Length: 176
Image 1: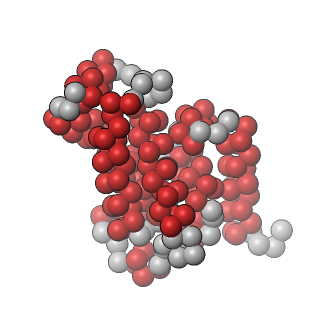
Image 2: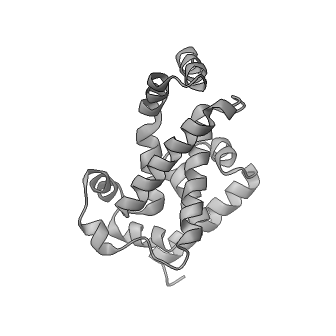
Image 3: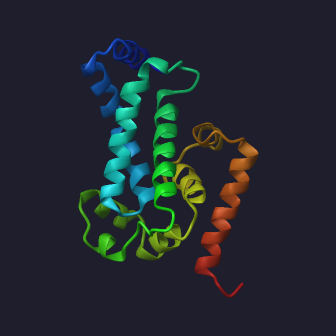
């Protein structure tokens, strides 16, 4: 953690909103991307997860101990918010192809990175599998960092990632 970030964290812990805004500006794009990939084009859901992540972080910043990076802590909050939303809406399909077709700038970014086939395949994965693919393959996190975010062991993450990739591969190669 760089000194400037440590300083911002310490000031944010005292309630300094400007310092917290400085932290938000550093992580906002990555948190929004994670929310967007997991919610897969459901802009309202992604927006809600994004906002809830930073609201929770602001409320809990005093509890941040620095045992992990601030980014890992924020990713964990975002992952928890995603899981809570999916638990509430378990039977609903958050991805509507109409939502994916009527894209705003964030979803346009998603569309450019992921074809509709990939979006459809990701939508069929469980939220746990979608999160491991998002964190490692789409966001480029190391296995160790993704495991810390998800609070699972590295072998468990590797196993989950292997299963998720196999499920995706099977969707693209159904003959085998």
